[in-house]
Length: 611
Image (cartoon, rainbow, N blue to C red; front, side, top):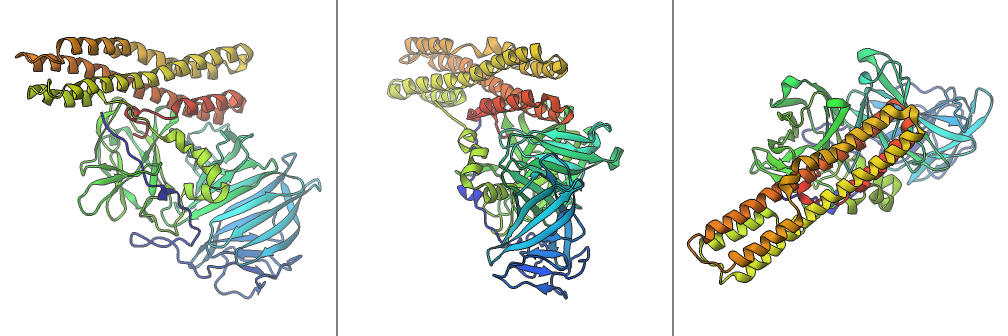
C-alpha cells in the first residue's frame, strides 16, 4: 500500500516573459524585448539581423496598408516574417546572432487547396501589447484566402485568426517525432522512421494540441486549437532513417489556432534504447535548460508509449521530488529512487536528474514492462523552481485557450485520486500492536472502528474494479455492434475487442483471492464474535489470522485495479495509434478514447495512476 501526493497550484502559472538561462546557461539571450515592426524594403535574409539593420521601422501606434518589402514583426522572443514572394508566414526563434526560421505557417482554402502567392498584406495592430498582420493569399485557381497573424509582447505564440476562404492552417516544421500529450494516460508519440513507407499522411486524434519536435533539440512547434471536430493530418516524406514529419494540417472551422515556438538549447531530447539497456544506469547527453516537470516518453512493445515524469534531486539530502499535476503537494522518493506501485511492484524509478539538471535513465528490468526504441524528453509543466520567464506545454495551453478551457481539457477533478476507509495493511498495522499488548478491551472502540474502515476500503477498491468490468462489457457490446456495420474495419475492431477482453481475463485470474465485500463483512462479524473481546493466550494469533487473510484480499484487489487500469490505458493509446495508420477508424477510435477517459477518471490511490 502506498500514498500518492500532488503538486501546488502554482504549477499552472503562466507568465509571458523572455526565457532566461538556468543550470549554467542554455537559453538564448535576447536583445529587443518589446514589439517591433519593420518594412525591409527589399527581400530579407534567411537569418534576420534584428539588432542592427537598415530596414524602415514602423513606430508604435502606427499601422500600414501595405509593405514595400518584407514585413518583419518581433517581440524579442519570436519574429514573424511575411515575404512578398512567398505564400507563408515564417516563425523565427530570436537568438543572439539573429533570428532563425523554425516554422512556416501556410493557409489552405475551404476546399483544402494550398495558397501559392501573397496578394496583399497590412499591419492592422502595432501597440506595446501586440502586433497583427492581416494577409491575403491566393490559390492556384485564384481563390483568396485571408488570415490575421498576431504576436503578443514577450510571448512565444502566434495567433492565427481565419478570414475569408480560410479552411486549414498548415504548420510546417520538420522532424522525426510528433507527440500528442495525454494528461490522463500515456502520450501518443509518433516516430516517422517506424511508420510504413507507403504512408504519405497520417491522421492523429484531435486532442486540442500537437507537438512537433524540430531543430537540433532546440525547438518545439506546439499547435493549440479549439476545434476538436476533425483530426490533425500529419504529412511525411523520405524513407528509412531519413524519414521525417514535414508538417501538420489543422482545420480552422471558424476558430483561432495558436502556434507556439518553444526554443532553448536542449528544450527536447531523444535517444534510442535497446533491450540490453534494461537495468543499466545511463547518463544522458542532455541537461535541463531549466527546472520543470519534464516528461519522458519511453517506447514499449507495439509502438506504445509509457510516459513518466523525470525526478528532480534535492541538493541537500539526495532525495528526489516527483512532480505531479493537481496542486496540493509533491511526492518524495528516497535517494535510491525505489518506488512501489501495483503491477510493477518495487522498482528503481527509471528517469531522474541530479541537482545540476543532468539527466539519467535506468530502463526498467521487469517481466511486466520493458523499454526498447526511441525515448523523447520535453517540458510538460511547471514546478516551483521553474523560472517565471520559462514556458512549458501547460503554460502555452493556459495562455491560449484560457484558464477554464485548459482546466476542462486537463480535467483536474477527474485527475484527483480517491482514498476511502483504511487500507488492509493499515488495518493490520493498527490491530497487531493492540493485541500484542493485550489492549483490545480498553481500545475496543478503536478496534471496532478499524474493522469498519477496512471494509469501507475493500468496498471502495472493489467498486473501482466493478467500474472497469462494466466499462469492458459495454465497450465489447459497442464493438460487437460496430463489427456488424463496418466489416471493412474487422481487424481494428477485433484488436480493440481483444484488448478489452483482458479486463475479464485479469478479473478471472484473481477472482478466488479477491473474494467479495460480503465475504469481508462476514470476516468482520466473526472477528467481533470471537476476537474483539477475547484476551486468551492465542488472541494475537487470532488477530494475525484475520489480518493476514484481509491483506491477501486487499493486495489482490489493489493489483487487480491497477491491472485493469493498464488495460484501459493501453486500449486508449492503441486506438489512437491505429487511427494514425488508418483514418477510416476515426469515429470508432474517437469513441473508444472518450470512453476510456471516463473510465480512468478519479482512480483509487492504489491503482498507481501515475507510476
